[in-house]
Image 1 (cartoon, rainbow, N blue to C red):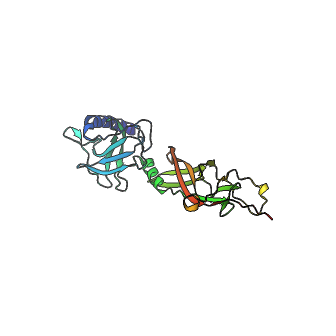
Image 2 (cartoon, rainbow, N blue to C red; image 1 turned 60 degrees about the vertical axis):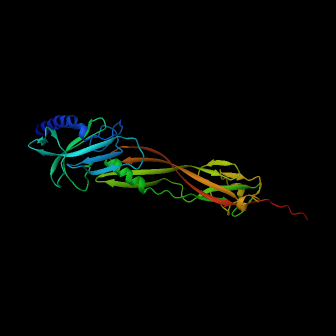
Image 3 (cartoon, rainbow, N blue to C red; image 1 turned 180 degrees about the vertical axis):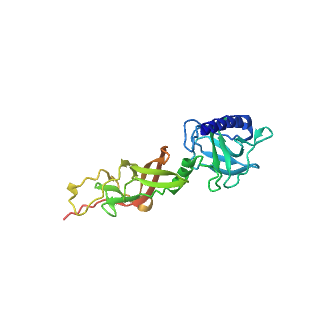
Length: 285
């Protein structure tokens, strides 16, 4: 019964505390939905500010350009089962490591979206709030997508009227990056879904990875799935070549150890190469 009683008291006091003094701690943003981080109910935040007695003591904002709400949080003195009130309202305090405090957050509308008793840890002044999103932000920075390596056959100069075999060299596979905030980890996964070839002659091809040409096998027994036939030589063009560009598109998503996750849209990587196309000359004997 003691745990239930404390929970009720905390909920009642924090509801009064935040709604009674929301104007002193609000920040802008928008919200909706349900997010992680110890019971946040006002949406997955894209920014968190932790206020102290004289101003912010910690802040974080997402580098992902999301549209979640901004949360404003604070530590409050806790003693004798009730928060210490100053001037009739709860005043944020500058927390001391190892001491217990009430920690609460409000969204832009003044709605309390997070509240609990915590022991202040200077290693995580956010008290676990938005841990999945903060870990996601770091994982997103760690994700390293390589530039595609365009490969063509025949090697070297291409011939007018002869199919050019196209493929992306190197592994065609999902790439991941993981980061952690405390016990919460988030993983970003990027999966290649298509390669778009701009052939420099006005032609665009959409393919998968393509199949590398095997010179040890008969060409009639192989299938690329991605070929192009140049109809004109590149002589007379700038540099005497066609600027061929391959762009690989990745679908990106994320998941956290808390069970949340979602899609992050797409990312692209491109590489260009100068391709010489020659006109084959007939030999008359």
